[in-house]
Image 1 (tube, rainbow, N blue to C red):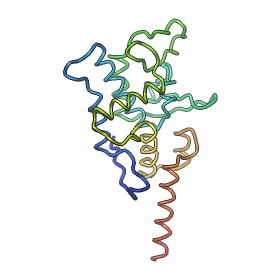
Image 2 (cartoon, helix red, strand yellow; image 1 turned 90 degrees about the vertical axis):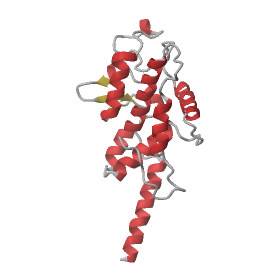
Image 3 (tube, rainbow, N blue to C red; image 1 turned 45 degrees about the horizontal axis):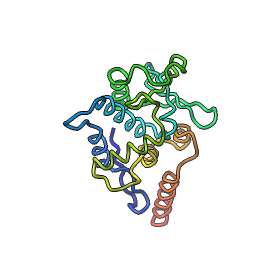
Image 4 (cartoon, helix red, strand yellow; image 1 turned 60 degrees about the vertical axis):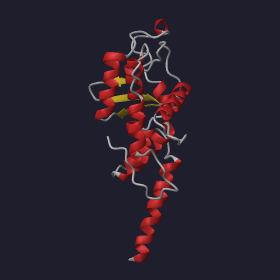
Length: 209
């Protein structure tokens, strides 16, 4: 998956750059002196990163994923949005690869609260201690990854990945209605800026013609 988004105006759209993305992925790799559970954490973190990048999901939605939300036949995820809304989102090749790698080889067999869950309703992503991931734990994860990757921009995180996905989707010819359905909301501020910039560019071209 190519995350590169051409900067139409660096002052308005400073999204996740390809170099930053590659450094985040490398930062997931275990250190030379691996601690217990390091491989499991690395596989989980890479899966989380790719899901955020390839779907534009909210952090809370990623944390709310259950084992039964993974549709292997269709290569998609069932997302539990705000309220009682549900939607299906397809994953790309890389996202599926890292998700299945985590599920099939590294996910803990049982979480701390597994006895209180129905079969299939167990959390998809677990901490090293077996607890469900939370939005706060993902925020802390990005803080650690940015530090290890020497990324100084604090805004590089789930929200910026969501914006990057949305703008990239439109730049590749995707329509706004489908994007709204994918994101489960109206367009984000970054999408509005992108649309406004495109509208201004088109108006300028018409004037010149």
